[in-house]
Length: 564
Image (cartoon, rainbow, N blue to C red):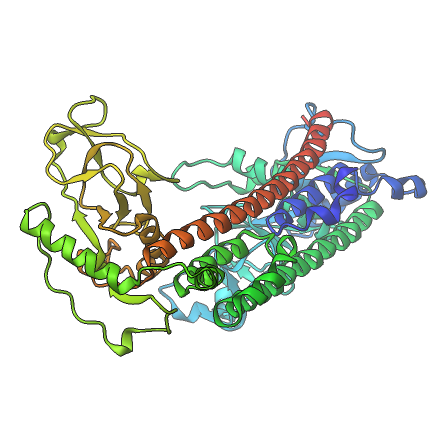
């Protein structure tokens, strides 16, 4: 059986744990977990005799007025379970015990409530635990409520959490949103296995009524057919399921711990990269790439660290040393900044761009770290031209008719750093041009960017367009990638966003032009490595998913052969 053959491999992904538990329950009620046990235990009381004994006991309880007589259901001629193991039976849930639905004593009388017995509602029940409120019913209130004996199966029968169920370990009472089954002879843990199985859960929802608030009444619930093994096999099934569940949970916990430890180690290693000798730390990390970066969260951290190293000048330390040794002359960034300022002044004079409000000087408190020789600190507004968008009225653009210019409205138009065109307008007013870097400045996609390949477009208020003068726009993209994380974190309001002032006053590092190009080349190469690592993770996850689907097919196709 593939489930047991690949058990440990399947538990490597935490996401698989709940599916594995569902498969275990499904296999349990099909008798597939106890096939070997049956071979070794042939002379046991069949389930038919157990059901007869339960029926006689129920009749005696009704006769002695300890329970009420329940509705009789039709004989199961068209049985949903076929090819059940030898000595198993197909029967109704009601045939294994007696049931009741909770009730709520009048709340107008405070004397009904106290701490005599816990009073449960749907919120107190989950498949993994039971919660027993301190405040419940008084002794007087219990007379108007329902006593639910310990070791009964309690299932939520209404609302979005319908189907949640567990066993109470103490006497309780409950409201009318809960159905209860108290077993006779059968271990309640077996009924819990049945009721939590995917088969039974599906039956509960399929038999429920009400679209807005689904519910299943007690009689429909009790009429769900279930597989009934012999009593001794029920006990064995409980043992096997408990053992397998513990193994799933232990392996799941080990997986979570492994991932957590690895993430902590990666975080520490990447921190060392940005604070210590980058070359030395990088050599160490390269030798352990596949072991450390096999989780998407770690690869995301690696991407962020690459960007941090880029803006600290640590990715191009070797490049600077090579330039120095070769005697190459590299224009200082301060000279480049001066040329940009002169060019901007001329463009303003020629009325090609608008004059911006004077930017505040950079203070010592704003400078986070020391820069390499030849670099300078500046504000974004000193080196870019920033264009803001303007929204159009619905009658000024079209989603279908290609008229006028493309209209870029927001984050949905920016995908994989490309601009996707889906609207057009013949009333453009805020222009962006080919080669501009578009960035989302409003909404949930704040900081998302894309390169414009169209000759000319109109941009909406959610979009800003960035162009540069005498410097690398690709390098500005690296800077914006770093700052986009900050923008997203700091974006506030009902609709998160950033304004022109935020972007223009952003402080940034500014290297010489040739080093800007070298930084971009390094970042692109390392991001390519991150892409490759991410692809390996995705392939590994796909393999795990395929294996899980294969196990699912084996179990549920087997069910189709055995269960109609």
